[in-house]
Image (cartoon, rainbow, N blue to C red; front, side, top):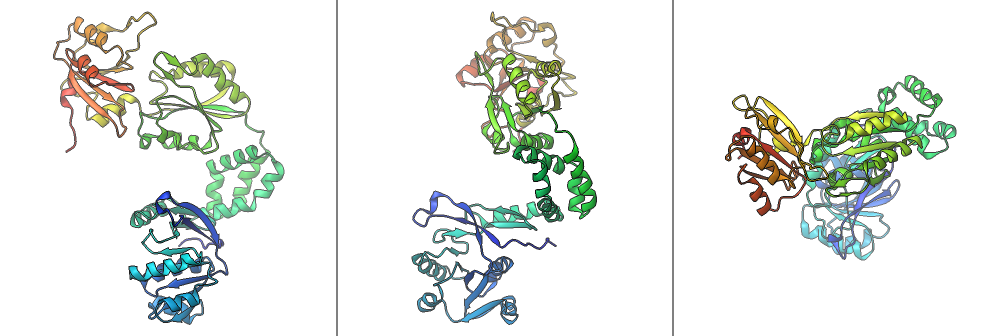
Length: 479
């Protein structure tokens, strides 16, 4: 059972009547003691009545007949029954003085009449399951004491909102309300010790990441206090760097640890390969700093990136160095770690799903196959400053393996010619995975003799991965 709420604020979403497509915005409305008119006495009214009673509203129910649950509320004195039809005269009599109005009958025309009259009096009104005449809607809510999670589709799909609420219900421990109450009761203690907002934020984040949070959820305030006091008495942690792999593009491929650090970072140094959807998952008040590299153009040289990480960490910041794929597969993660070690800066490493793994899987190509590929070789197709490709050509021409080429689109003609020159046949299979794992992913398949021409005709652009080997012929696509 949910922890009872002590809040009297209802979470709603409002929209301008004149332009209901302009979007909905969340508001919190205090309803304790406020008069609310609930038009309708059936099952729909039961659902809205429960929400209103939970917020301490004074409810008048305008209806001819009452659902047994509503009848029980009337008999217990929790709501007042205004018997009669919801016609214009009754509505004009009872609407004035209301804080909110719910049109909750099973007759759409009646609900719209209620909405029109309420709107004329500038009273917020919700016609249930009918966003167009409504000036507000009620999101599906998950309640754990003082903790409230509201889920809304802006009135577009209420059933979806309720289903998402059910999923969130299962994810939030029952003790979340107790944890919130504990943290509220200790806020002044923490504020007195650490008047700076950033210091307090870090204390609470460390508390939530440690065992104290679980003890508070379980109601063991004594042990939770031990954990909190230890954090308060400890020397303030210096800054550190978190080198994190964000995966190949699909935000669902983030690791749980990467997501947690994205929520804790003070600043994020990120590459150009990261999608906006991934950056949207970073905490809102973190500073975002673009340091990404594109072919022939660097936002920051690598040495400057290293110095910026070190400078920020030494100033006490928690620096998230967020990289596409995995930092240690052609991500220059090794160079950055060496610079941090030399500067004496603490760091943490979080691997990510590599572009090779993600792109191959999403395109249906196995990287290894017992019939044709007993090994997999990763190489970079990035040429040196003089345009020369310095690659292990002999190793790459082994027919018993798969070769995955990163950053190989601009040098694809040279790559194909080099492999042909080392003895691979002209019909040796090749695939290109462009924007792998993302909704716009595109896969081209061909051979060493024609793949460069195909890529040029299709105007393939980075990010793209090249996969060479017989495994391409084993590609499977779900029907």
